[in-house]
Image 1: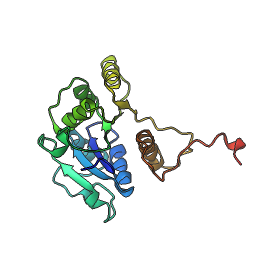
Image 2 (image 1 turned 135 degrees about the vertical axis):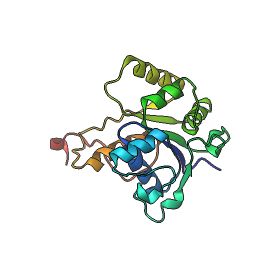
Image 3 (image 1 turned 60 degrees about the vertical axis):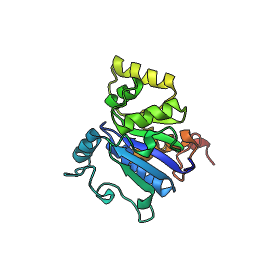
Length: 207
């Protein structure tokens, strides 16, 4: 498999699960194949934040993702305990891995090489293979341990993109704020998109 148009995406149990949902929806709409894994805590947060009782690893994608018929075949799902899955190997080809949102537990595990599930194993693989790994942490306030773990991840080669949407784009809806973070990740990875949101200078200076 060539890495073009393939992304590994992990959704872990941080608040802000909709950042991950929105990112997957955009990535598949843009023609990318998403190799998706969700932690047990991620499923639990999804139940609480998205009002989806009973959603879990066996639930259909249509229960929690808004996908067109052409998008659904672009998602390959893996069980979080399936450490023999293809993305767990350094020989697996994918453009990048994105963990969105990234809980502090997941960040700590990756920072210290504690690969106890498929998500953390995949992240370890991307670091050791020097391939792009993007983490979108969603936590506040950040304690000293959190900051040290994020620093260690940055030193190891991961890209840290905190879920801190900007307001200079004059967002009008919640989706605008969610899309801001998808744009940041796409831009960082050099992935073309149609979401706009590029700074065009002060309003009074625009023509």
